[in-house]
Image 1 (cartoon, rainbow, N blue to C red):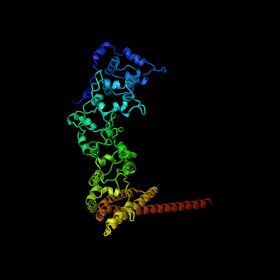
Image 2: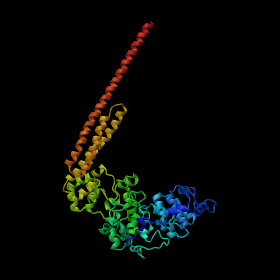
Image 3: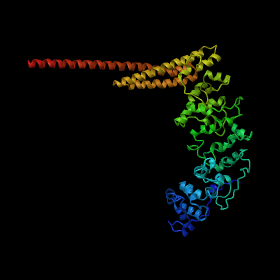
Image 4: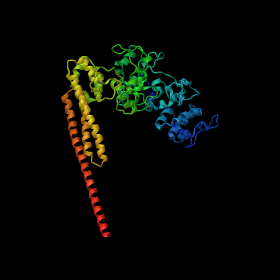
Length: 514
């Protein structure tokens, strides 16, 4: 029988009516008052002013629960009380904590050893990281009432504090064969009826997907402890929502989480890819240098793809020839559609090349540039055409045509942009020119995308509006220059006329003087 008693928040047999009858409102019982008054070796109160202020702000129910734990001698030391108050929990969390003898016992440094003590300040190298108390109370399970007993078994409301482990918890060898963790977590996460009570949107097929993944087979069939399990990616006590920046599966932290294994040469030693080559360990380094990695990790663009966008989550799979293009097409749908209708699609399938990755790479995807199409022995297109299209000169000619057209439009856009700025500084209206420049930029963007059709006709249809915009810009620039010359001529004429008038006045004045 699954033990989920802590979901129900069992209490420590607290009777608020009894507490209210025994204690006057606002009066602190003697034992609790003694803890508040206790002083350390330095002569200062053990309970800090901030912790006391937090206690004073608790509602009557929480104060009654805390008083009860002190009266029952579950909390007997000021340091223990200070740890509880230092958390500064919201009422809902504090109520769960004060009704759980497991937590209260495991936060008492007088009772617990370092390896079993939940602490706010873990000792480096001595206290396991999963015993961080702050992480524990921030766990998504804790907020929903699932505390120690939900996983470890036992009754958190009992004073005996017996460790009655659930049946999925092995009595020995837990670190050597970690396959038990899957069924352990799946007790709840594979039960749709049970999970619907807490988060109906959360899928319940994670275990089924994992079993069919390379990770799952490596763990369950090869029984290799290096394979990742649920805890490897989600953590132990500090499990947080994927939307929480502190979560190990938060979008920006996914590369780091995957890289913890895949960048470890020692951990990957002896593992091979499907073609028999050694498993690489440079994926994370390449991703960080890629256009995707910089967008996600440096600019904080959460829409940029991480490892799981291409490889999946629980059903993590090595990308195949078809899955590569399908992954890329989720974001680059227009380019994927153009490629699917091109002749290159057929050639790629015949040679069994990964479609997008053949030209752009996989983890170290660089920002695209028109020079990728340039002629030359080392150009991207020429390398492939020299080997596979020697008898078809149209291939290189088409690539050259693409590059020449794009280079010309890009050059015109830059030059006219500078010209428009200069004309604006002369006081001329350049808004019509900027409108045409925007049309040229849109057409240039479309033409670059239509390279993936590998068709001159399709490319030219996308480039035509840009070429028309170039003609329009040329006309507007000439008109603006002509207007400026006209203004200059008008200014010179005006100055000349003003000079003649002033000269005539001067002559007239001289005559009047004589």
